Amino acid sequence: MNKNDDKIMNGVYYTPPVLANFLVQPILGKKIKRAFDPSYGEGSLLRAVKENFINSDKLEISGCDINASKKDYLNTDFHLQHTDFFYYPVKKEFDLIVMNPPYVRHHSLNREKLAIYHSFSSKYCKVNKKSDLWVYFLIKSCLHLREGGSIAGIFPLSILHADYAIPIRAFLYENFYKIKVL
View 1: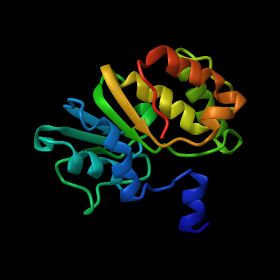
View 2: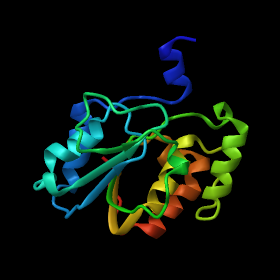
View 3: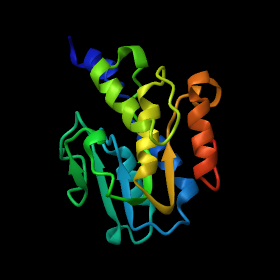
View 4: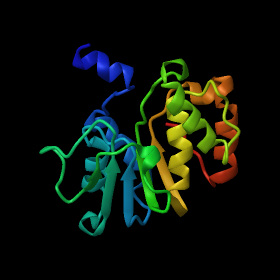
């Protein structure tokens, strides 16, 4: 298996810097002390936060990724962990979560991991067992938000139309004051 096959199998699609900057623009007026990316990859979303927020030198920027490690292209001020997001402690809370979660179809997920993700997420949202990996990332990300926090994410169109996404849409409507689709 070559490197590109491994990326596709693990749902890795890196965010271009222009898209990362576009994503953080609508939340620039918010007061942010702690920001997080649960699957930082090449770090473009974390860099966009650092570059776009005033007083970003006072901003704690963190991330985790199961496949990535600290790279020279990332700011050394970032708090990065090479770990599975589902093992990242829920007690850690953030004002902002930026994310481009992995896009892995449910039938391509390891059955044991899928059972863990589903068991965990079902405590908070009636998740369909045919949900793709991004759904579980979104639910767990919500648990890391401080009161009044924001999530800026890149999600597939299925969030708006797929039957398996109905419970996640209801969960979002119940838990967020405002939802913007760009």
